[in-house]
Image (cartoon, rainbow, N blue to C red; front, side):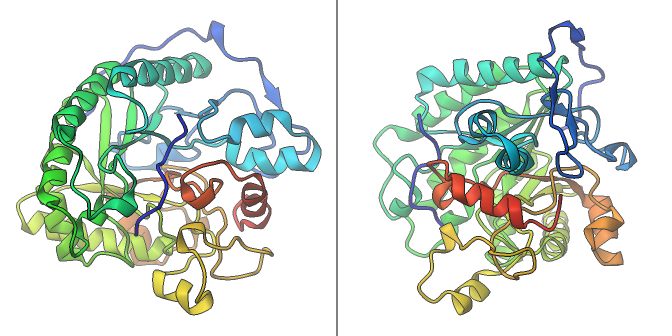
Length: 383
């Protein structure tokens, strides 16, 4: 599934990491009578609630998670400017860890400074260099995904490699969870221009970022209602899965978490049979609070827009867009309503539920949509 707009406006862990003194923490933010689970916020870094109970080898479960406080997605500035009930609703998004997208709209000459500023700001506001920074790298579609049939511009692959090199130098030894090339699955569409070119670009990025000591990379692998397992497996093998920790599921789709977990387990097994064992995965839960599949959406909305799917109108409506499980490494908790088998799979192979989908943006891309944000915050079954 492809989006029509560009996405922006403008390996084993190291044995130890440095910790920065807490003297330069941001001023404490307190929200009176905030919704359950967000009652008091004392920093823009949040602990991974219950994460210490996750598998000790999970690199995302150890230490605090950063919260993006910049303006790229519009959420945090909107929360700052709001008051009353609106502020409480916006806090459900603004004060939670969200993946910041870095892509082709940022020139190669500027990407290092953008990444460095994001890393240093997040670390400073968290009061520690141990904070987990959430990032997506999105550079395969410089002219937008709907132009997937068009050849890449002349010279773009080497430019992309330069972009990746600059970004990697800026990340350095920071602790990062990276979703690499959301919508990589588009490369499996019939009629796409030379998919191998984009797979080779992604493989280069996987190798370069994969050498960083504390960056944990998850290649986009589509969704349970999109690519068949063998198709996703072959795409990942071509795109550098050997160099990274695993793959990511659910970007731009709204599939039920349990279905994604089962699909992910099947893909883990298929990769192992192909000679790439022990891969893990993350799942997007930003917008599957009331999940639905691609066919289910069109059955309910024959003239709809899947990319800008209708938000829920009430807390009880089904098959509509609303916030899902808040970001966490507590993946097998009973409160998520998974079956025993799904919990077993999650405990073994899922590193985290992350928010790399962005239902608060128009068509999941840009610009910020205040009304959508309020709608998904008001109707989510998860506080």
